[in-house]
Length: 431
Ligand SMILES: Cc1cc2nc3c(=O)[nH]c(=O)nc-3n(C[C@H](O)[C@H](O)[C@H](O)COP(=O)(O)OP(=O)(O)OC[C@H]3O[C@@H](n4cnc5c(N)ncnc54)[C@H](O)[C@@H]3O)c2cc1C
Image (cartoon, rainbow, N blue to C red; front, side, top):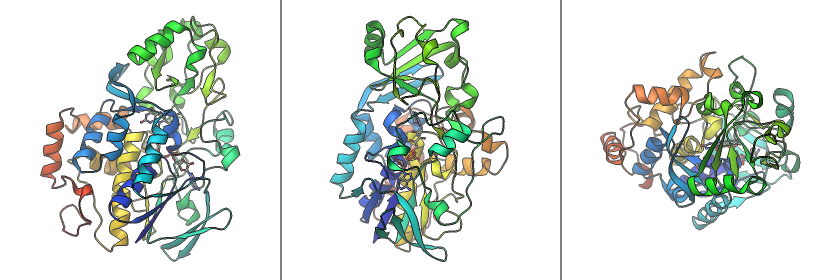
């Protein structure tokens, strides 16, 4: 039994872990030369409701990547505007540690393997093909190609290619597996109705900042520098991550220590930045043109059901940003875990798992799908860490930082260690 996953971001890595642990021969195809996709420049975990979602996944037996990330953190339990009990993983070490872990599970990692074609038999996907014609057949497939770029979209809907970590000009841009199968996809919009959203943070080279800023970042994980009104740049409405679209993020420079100095704004004009004390010699680490713009995201999301199967296909599943307007590593890992599990269930001819809405993850998978049916909903972004989805979690009493409470909730749903067990055919929560 073989599973092929296209896209090695957090969603694809989580799906690969689940499929391999369930006993499938697992192949992960990634177009660049590194894992984690946009996770190579992220790092914020466990802030607000992400804490609950991570603990739920652990209680369901799908917590390997959360535990690996916990072991790669530079800071734990920190607060910054609007966000409590956050962890910051080290963006330098985490991609390599994840690669080692996936290899230890026997997952076949294929880098510089950009999928550009498919072989279909009606609604069955038979094989995917790389640019050079290499063919990979499987029993079930995952589309975890994300929604960011390529360069044409960043040029058309943003401020041009800002030379971000996705490195489209070098490796070729994102290509959607769902799109290759001929399934019409959905676009996210900004509040004003225009297509796409700009990635919400840029990274400064720590060594280019004043030593006292670097010391505080290394010690506390966070530095907040108030801006004089004439230097404030308001890019909040452009942001993919609406949880950071608070006034504090335009009135201050908010820096977080992920190895880089992560500046919580999509971009900031370099000449303006150089006027701020301590930033006189600042330069960008990612994207290189962070003074001008950032990558654009939320193009081409797959229509799917709550098992994360792509609608119109029998054996294709999706996760991460591909599965809807879900922003974040936690969101990608949680959906990747469910989709990876269900891909194996599908390949074995067993019923698919739907997570109940008594769990934060199950509720989010369902809520986002429903919201995306409306014009208002496609203008929003959803994350456990803030904005609409966190408010919804709190309304439904799903947000907690009490591990025992989370474990009890998972037990009541009959899902304790479900992802760690044998593939199963009993009926509770299964469709
Ligand atoms: C600058 C930035 C900062 C962020 N910071 C944070 C943060 O601090 N905390 C947080 O929780 N979230 C953060 N996010 C959001 C988070 O990174 C994403 O929402 C999440 O990681 C998406 O994961 P994914 O696997 O769905 O997609 P992606 O990370 O986009 O991964 C998709 C992968 O698929 C590959 N791919 C695409 N097409 C093909 C193809 N045809 N063949 C083979 N491979 C292909 C790509 O190369 C890529 O590696 C940030 C995002 C950005 C851009």
